[in-house]
Length: 178
Image 1 (cartoon, rainbow, N blue to C red):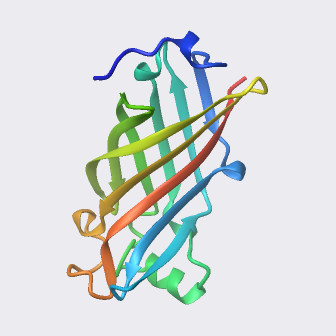
Image 2: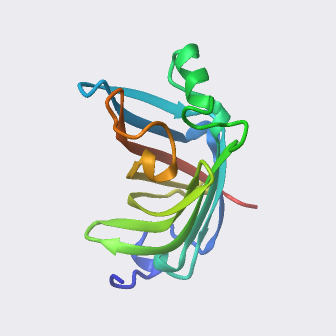
């Protein structure tokens, strides 16, 4: 575990509970298509909570993504992603993240946790850049991880048509809970 960061070292830091603001946040993904290009998409509906502890390392995050809200800008592709070939949203309508720890990594942080997708739970680590805390009661952060979709039973093995590695990028703003 990295060095302890006290609240006085992060301007505006407060020990509190924050609600993820889905209007000012993004949950996006990128995956290789046909081995040469990249396809991008996003999830339009998600919610979550960040609890900042006495120190940042004592903080936690929980989040739920509505998998049915997948949006790649192409209705046919979105329908295919929702069906049993990939996300199977009739059986698995949500994906969930629950942190298990926060640690410092140079200038950034890593949020370790458990990610459940398609009914399968695996450990993931989110490389996280803390944007900061505002006097208006906002918290901002950017985070990124890469998963192997076949580890979660999503889509066919092999990755010829759709790559196995999926990069998930988060741009999060959270509002101080009153």
